[in-house]
Length: 223
Image 1 (cartoon, helix red, strand yellow):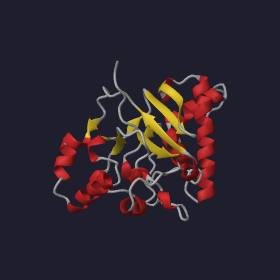
Image 2: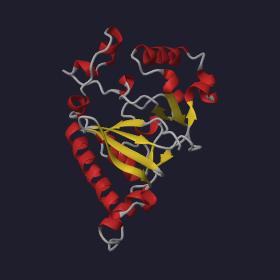
Image 3: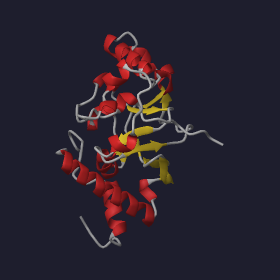
């Protein structure tokens, strides 16, 4: 039996962008803060806890602040409470045998920036808060939503989709995805974020989104 590849953790307000495009984008494409060019990959971790370095910093919620975790050890993060501000927390999982992914610690990509002082500091911070750089994996390119699982945190991690593929999903899965997209768009509106977090979208509607709409509506709609 194959072990699971480490997960890509994300926030609910990101799901509309992910499912609209049909892929998890590399860091700089969708990051509200633009991300880092040197580390423009899709990031995964073997850790089963939401990475502290990826927590959103929310005013009035100290446990969401990275600085708190750097100055204090073992600070509990209530993911339900923090997740309420961002539309819940989700994680995508893939098989460890998938050739799209590689272990960060042994990668050529890491070797090429090991001497970069900024990145060295970022790795040091990740290790100090318990994220453990050795648990990181990357995908150098956008990751299509094929052969993936999806979980939501609601008192614990709950599986929503197992071994799913957007390109040939059944109707029940598509209904679930559509519902998640609607919730995601509502949270974006509430937060004042664009519903589609891509700085330079290639097209206005993607094939993945068209598949969802057409199947939900009995393929009677042309767009």
